[in-house]
Structures are given as C-alpha cells and as structure tokens.
Image 1 (tube, one colour):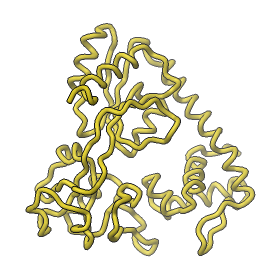
Image 2 (cartoon, rainbow, N blue to C red):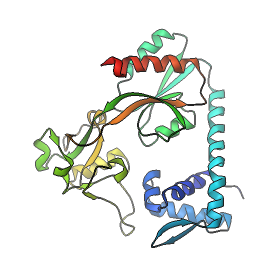
Image 3 (cartoon, rainbow, N blue to C red):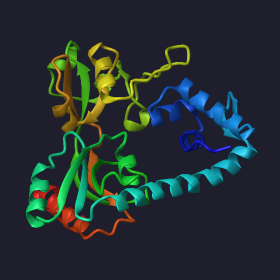
Length: 289
C-alpha cells in the first residue's frame, strides 16, 4: 500500500487541532470531505486513528504513533519538492511571492536595477497559501502577513498593518469611517475566532446539518457580508484590492494590527535574498517612515 501524502497532511491537521471542524477550516475544505479522507486513510492503514466522542477528537495509540512518524515524513517530502524545484530552475532566476495590498513594484524595480543579471519573476499568493509557496520552493522569498509557523522561516518584519471590518453597505453603521468591536457585537463573525481573538460576539459556524461548507475564500466571505450574514475582519491593504459597491470597510479601533513581513526558508542561501531583504527593509520598514 502506498500512503497518500495528502491524506497524511489532513491527518496531522486533525491531530493538531483535536477537532475535525477546526482542521477543516484550517485546510479550507468542508468537514464532511475531511472526515471521508480520514476514514479512507484509516481503511488503508487498517487501524483507527481517532476516537470521536462528546469530549472531542482524541488520538488512539496507533494515531499517536502515526503522528510521530507523519511529521518527519511530510517534512522530508516538502524538502524534496523544494530541492527538485530549485535544481530545475535557472541559476539567475529569483521568484517573489506577493499578496494583495502590499505595494511591491517599487521594490522589484530597485532590485532589478541593482541586479540586472537576475531574472525576477512574481507569483500571486494569499494568506491561505503563503506558507505552501515558501515550503515547496515555488518562491524564493515572499511578502507575508503574520503569523507564520514559528521556527520555520527567516522573517523580517516590515510594518504593522491596521485591520478593517467589512460590512454590508446597507448596514446602519456603513456610514461611519471607524467602528469598535463592541458596536459589532450583534453581527456574526464570518471567520475563525483565532483570526480575531479580541472578538466577543457571535461566530458564524456551519453545522454538519448544513451543506458543511464554510465561506473560506475572501471572495466567498465578502459575498456573505454583502448578503447581510455578518462581518469579516481583514487587512486594510486588502480592502483596497477587494472594492465592491455592496461592501463597506470600516477602520477597527480596538483590534491589534497584523505585521507585514518578508519571509524565506532558512535553507535558502542565495545572495540575492539578502540584497532583496535589505531593499525591502529600506523601502517598507520603519526607516522608510
């Protein structure tokens, strides 16, 4: 039997979250689909990996052993992908990952000016896949929004970015420019509570009796906002990118900003990394204020 590494990754997410619901949200898939994948993995292995009861989701003895083996297995797989992709690229290629709302064009121009022999490519990422792009070597360096998994990357903080609340343009508060979380308490939060730990109101969670589908992409969340289902908290820079007539963005007065940073794998040794990092720090970091 050959192990499906995709299912192994799903297993690790459930084991770490101790919850199929939270793991499904983290993996940006539906809970029923995740349950089916885990059942298929258990059938392949011929053992039960989880105990499911009212207390939550717990690892069996076999599950604990598999988790111990699965983490290095996934790390080895990712490292192999990264090395193969790096080996298959031209030596003078340098790929930069970027997200909506972070102005990288001036940095790219300055870097190209100082490194005319380097061919610069850019790839669009999002908060949901920025780590994947770094781990599997699709990008050499990436502009990211924190947090990232600790200890995995070299991280250069650049600037704190305020966050905004997305509301339906028909909401009574939509005429305001700023709002507090207390004023939003009657709305449902359309995202994981971990994204907004300051939140004290309702959280919209799909139940297994529903379609099981969470609004996971920003576009889906904004559709839900526009329909009046609740509010969504996002980086201020992204609000400018996702402008729509039926959604209004209000500055949040009592929510901590998120740090925008530059990140790259600790295994990367290219000299271009340090040059690009220095330019980014100079143009976007505190010294640029």
